[in-house]
Image 1 (cartoon, rainbow, N blue to C red):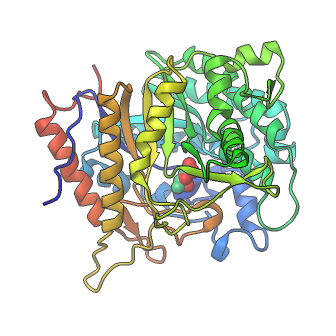
Image 2: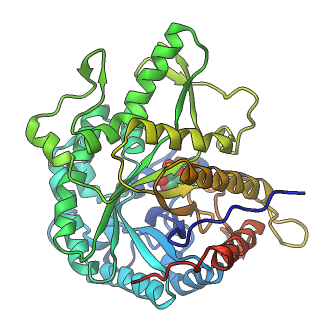
Length: 451
Ligand code: FCB
């Protein structure tokens, strides 16, 4: 017999997550400007399989259907991102009314279904004009970003309480360090990291000024790092990996300085910047998929490389499938940052091929097994003292997995990228039932969305 799913406290908020470029499509509709990702996808040899986000899930034109899928699932929270070039095509100055209207319809459609919005200001797509000016390697992007964030707060702050400034600044930095396949790119990784966290810090008070009862956070991809062996070289490599990944943003956000290695900060920032970066946060968003098992390596940018987790299978993206290690990351957070603000799990998911069977149904059982174990780990972390307030599955829909194209599927809902038909998978039915249990067995039911 399988163990029953854990039951969570009534205040816990359940949701699903997506991001604009991965689902919206409508890449040049209604006055939207081009983004860095449009450019990246459109150049020869762009994304895997020649994929682009031109149509993606066509969410922009299928909003009502997708909102109904969420309502049918029974979630109380939806994490989405705003496409910067859709609402401010040149990255400064003029706002695009029709783009802003789309997010009004989205927010209002959520509220009408009693689903609370969680808005990510930046999930990797910025106006091409920003890219042309140097992207995040240019310090001015931090100011442009803060202006953009404030514009969104003015527009949506009456209805959206929960805001995420940046999604995974570490991934943005890595893209800069390693570059996409194809033409050479700028290699200013650490400068990019500095400007991202500066942009975040500049945006926080600007959001707070316009959002009543604001809850403001940032989403970080954290892994939980272990050395491949107990040889000193690998142990040192793991310490470097922890500094350049798990601690790279948490330290400046929570301790006001970049992590130190051998007595020196991995990145120098002046006092004024460091004070801006440490703007008080209401929550830390954690995106978790897999741990980092690392060994010393001369070829790695920072002298380490990820190696396979012994005995673990891998998902379609080659990430080790070890959901039982989620708890180790949460324990590391408790130990390392005793003053950590409450946690929101802002992403957690599983990549599969997810082909429909002969009857058209998608039996994504490995995803269910993975998510169930992750949730057991989250429940155990609550018992051990972690303050975790919510959880979002990545993702509602199969979507464009960035450089990897459309092959890796993360959705609870299958999308046929030829017909754009949506088909709930077995995992959708499982999550719906799981949420039913939370409503029934969580002491006094789920806390209502508002008040
Ligand atoms: C995260 C991204 C998200 C999605 C998942 C699979 O790194 O934030 O957009 O691609 O990975």
